[in-house]
Length: 136
Ligand code: HEC
Image (tube, protein in one colour):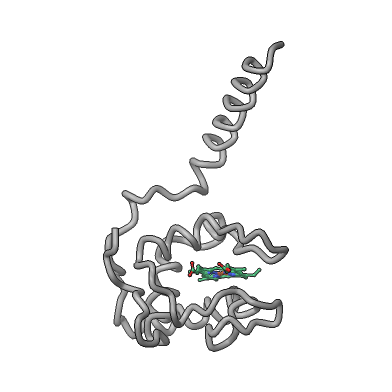
């Protein structure tokens, strides 16, 4: 098989892997609300805090300042990419080029759980942060 043939085969198999995983895991931006529907909801904030401490704090730190036990996981008090990017990042993860990457949580957390975490994190936001904004 020539180079082009191999490349096509590779591309096709990559697409089918995405298609298989995609159904369950990869989020589609159009399914995510533009702004957090649970923003400011006391019950959601409480649940979000509990999720955050359970699954995120090990890397992002108990105060979300990035000082987790496992090293730098980004200071989330300064997150400024808006609500949709937050949800997509949590669902799909993020490569960093370093040994510590942001894991994909799409198979673990429901959308509502992620909105709860967002509602909690926006209460810790510092100046310049954009948690609930529709930036897309
Ligand atoms: C295994 C460690 C680890 C865990 C657990 C983890 N993260 Fe991350 N997270 C990272 C790393 C590393 C980055 C990338 C930092 C960078 O861009 O340099 C990151 C990035 C992010 C970003 C993007 C920040 C930005 O400015 O783009 C968000 C949002 C985020 N994490 C939220 C969460 C939430 C919410 C949880 C819990 C559900 C969580 N993370 C759990 C390691 C982790």
